[in-house]
Length: 330
Image: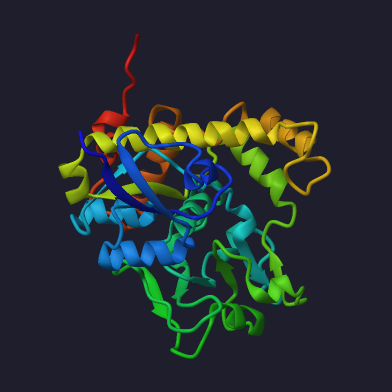
C-alpha cells in the first residue's frame, strides 16, 4: 500500500515534539508537522480547512459537530489541558471580593465560545453560584482590537453580550475600570506589568485548583486533534495510526522528564515538582483516550449545552473516530 501524505498543524508542545521531529513515525504516513501557534491553527482550520488534520479548540469542535459545519472528526488526543481558576482577573476597584460577586458585573471574554471560557463559566456557575444570565458580557480582542468569534454562536436572547468598540481592547478596559472582570486563557498585559488596578480573583489559585481536582477529578481539557471529514473518509485507517503516534510521543516525553542525571529543563527542582503533581493528579494526568477522560468530556459537553453553545447535548462517544475508542488484544 502506498504511503499517504498528511499535514498536521499542532503547536510545539514537549509532549508532541518526538512526533514533530520524526522520532516517532506514523505507520503508513508521510507526516508534515506544522508547529503553528494555536490561534493561527484554529483560525485557518475553521475558516479555510487548510490542513488534513489539526489541533482544535474543544469549544469550536463541539459547535462544529452541533452545526454540521465545518465537518471534522476527532481522535481522543488532548495536547492542551489547563486549570482555569488562575485565568479570572478583576479590576481592584470593582468591589469584587469573591466569585459570587461577579453576578451583575461587566465581564470581558475574548470569544464567548472559547474552551477556556466554557470551563470558567461552568465552574463559576456550578461551584460558586454565579448566575451567568445576570452577567453583562463583553467580547473582543484582549490585546489587539478587532477580534471576532471564529465560529459565531447562536446564543439565547436572555444573555447580555456586547462586542466592544473597534479600537478597544479588553485588557485596557479592565485596567481603566470599563469592565469589572476578565476571563481568559492569556494573562492580560496590565497584570503582567503588575498594574495595581488588576488582580486575580483567586490569588492562591494553585490551592483552589488542587481542591477543585480533589472534588471533581477534572483536569480541564482545552484542545483535541481533528481530521477534515473528507480526509478521514478517504483514509479512515490513518486515525488510529496517528492516535498511536501521539500516544507514543507523549510516553517518550514523560520518560525524558524523569531523567535525573542531566536535567532537561531549566528548573532546578523539576523532578520534585513532578512528584508533587502526581500526588494530587495521579500517575497520568495528561491521559489520552476516551474512557480515561469520559468524566471531563461529559462535563464539558454539558457546560457547552447549558451555555447555549450547542443546541443538542452531544454524545461524547460520537465525537471521536470509532477505531480510536478500542484497542486490539493479543
